[in-house]
Length: 117
Image (tube, rainbow, N blue to C red; front, side):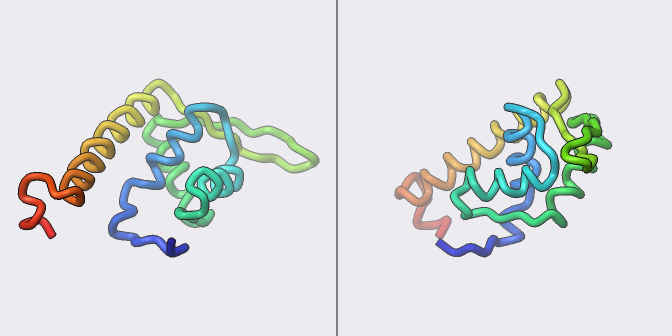
């Protein structure tokens, strides 16, 4: 599998992965970068330049909250999902599940498969 990602297809994926990972427990930005690589078996590799803007946008929208925590002499910003973020995650998962089902059906020869490819 290629280690590069298609930016057009990836639209919305960082937000979905970040919300899903933060649903389980709080993390800081670089920890999320590493967690995304780990849970996707390095199929998706997002840099800090992608993750931090998404974190800031989600926090601004009220989907995340943050807190500063001193760790080994450094201050890290930890993020957690808010109730609004949980709703957003549920919506995103529903949309991605529907999209996945349609694509899988098409790839497996479902109705109109020959027209879709």
